[in-house]
Amino acid sequence: MNEQRLTSQQALPKIKQYCSYQERCHSEVRDKLYLYGLHRNDVDTIISQLIEENYLNEQRFAIQFAGGRFRLLQWGRVKIKFALKARQVSEYCIKKALEEIDDDKYIKVLHDLVLKKWETLKSEKNNYVKKKKLQDHLLQRGFESDLVREEVAKLDK
Image 1 (cartoon, rainbow, N blue to C red):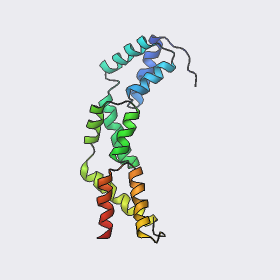
Image 2 (image 1 turned 135 degrees about the horizontal axis):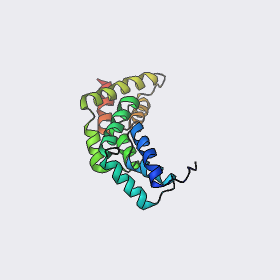
Image 3 (image 1 turned 60 degrees about the vertical axis):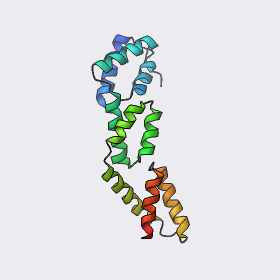
Image 4 (image 1 turned 30 degrees about the horizontal axis):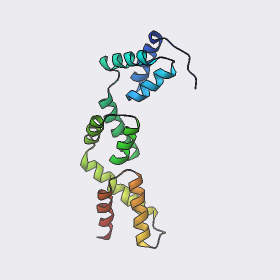
């Protein structure tokens, strides 16, 4: 998608609107500004201004992103962490975002996913294969392997 070339004065209100619409990470905003045809110095200046004016806040983005992915998509912390790293979010902000996820709710979501997936595996006769498929599913969703093992082990009790 080729955007029109803009000056930094033309790009500023557009990028403010872009940041106001929803939380953005620095890399998204940087990429958008480069699409506008701006050069590095202009991009750095605009990003600094957005941070100063609180349009852009990486920690706020990370917390919102992690909460949304957990609540809406039921992603585990591992998958959320990798997604934030892919967006070049700092380790500090990732750590803060993951701390915001309530442990009790996290375990409840994991437990509910175990029960839901277990039901879909009823046709599988081999219990070992069934548990392996369940574990693989939960790991793919981004849950920690030790928590997955604990939850799957509860099925034997």
